[in-house]
Image (tube, rainbow, N blue to C red; front, side):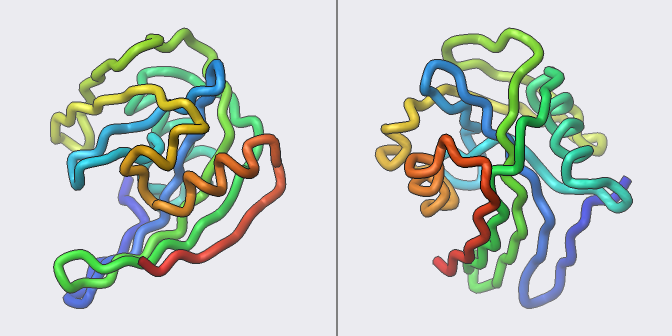
Length: 160
């Protein structure tokens, strides 16, 4: 399947999903390769796929686990500039429950993504310490900390 993304000479648009796995007041984060820092695990929505289907697929691919979707936490529009080009994302953030045991410390998982081997590194961060990490998008850490018990949809825009 093809990811929902548009690439032009001026920039990119992507439709994405991100998963919030929380255990003992700690949030599982993905150490990114694009920048020094972290974000929530997830990925692109594929053409013909709902965001919920994409969330379940991405957790199977990246973390090798099945999850239950608890609720939609928020929808975020993120617009930022990289290398002089505009990047725009619409990202659905879902609260998840793992149906498998996850390691309590840092761990690495390999994935074959569209024929390319990728290595994903994960670790846990206390929710109260999210602002101490280089967590992207920046404003999502504040939304998570201040609204962790909320199951309401939060829609916001971030222009970095």
